[in-house]
Image (cartoon, rainbow, N blue to C red; front, side, top):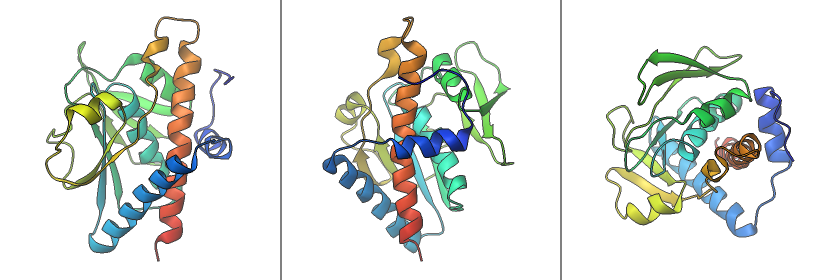
Length: 211
């Protein structure tokens, strides 16, 4: 069980990796993503990661935010994280609350009842990323990119993603199943921890492989 009090961001990130339990098949997939990132960085000035899920409201947003943190944590200057969906909804409030519990800072950039835009940052950096729901081909998502689908529905309904250098399917359980239940906070944190731990492994491997 994960306690639902606030965590320091680096502690949560490191603990997620320390307690990560995955199959060899899943580990090989994560290493394949790391290998591709390194290969592209050797050929380009930078590389973009675009995490894609149907509604761009939970898993893809969490993955974008933790990738942003991971790049800073491992001092990898030229990896940029984005996210998108096959349709636009909103950065779900439960996702925001979950990430705030690991001390990510959310400042409203453009208010909207339907789909507010946030500037997201964390202690120790002056950088930030934009957080709002959008389609994967939105103009704010930089090209070209490696596409990483985070839910089965997005993988099945996106047989072709224009401008993707490569595509990987890295699905996670949707914490939406716990919305409006007593397990809501815990389930969102479990999903965040799973994503954080796997991204730690990816970015750690990238750091090791780069000259």
